[in-house]
Length: 155
Image (cartoon, rainbow, N blue to C red; front, side, top):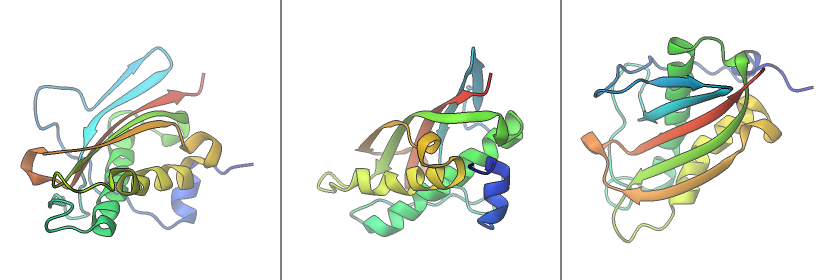
């Protein structure tokens, strides 16, 4: 049986960065029925600074992938801070991954794998991988990646 998400974080020796405050007029998380919606998150370092850069310009695909993984850590921190235990989450349902990139950069799915692989590590292969989109665009504050997600909660 898969370990609980909080136990997996311990087993993987993962520390979460601080949850960022909202950057506008919105809620960081919202629970509707049996679903947890998480607003777009950027990559926050352990010191609270943002990971910035543009894939295809000053970031290569592997650096951007690491930023996407950092978004995953930031999102887990936001959930823990504003919702409670990660153990209340049953599965990842939907992920929208946005990569700050040049028009000719075509590795957005590879970059967002950084997030998806982390979720699979924390929630297990079956529950950590949901449906997903990975697109390129310009992002606020030049953050490298932004991701929003929807999770199903345990009944």
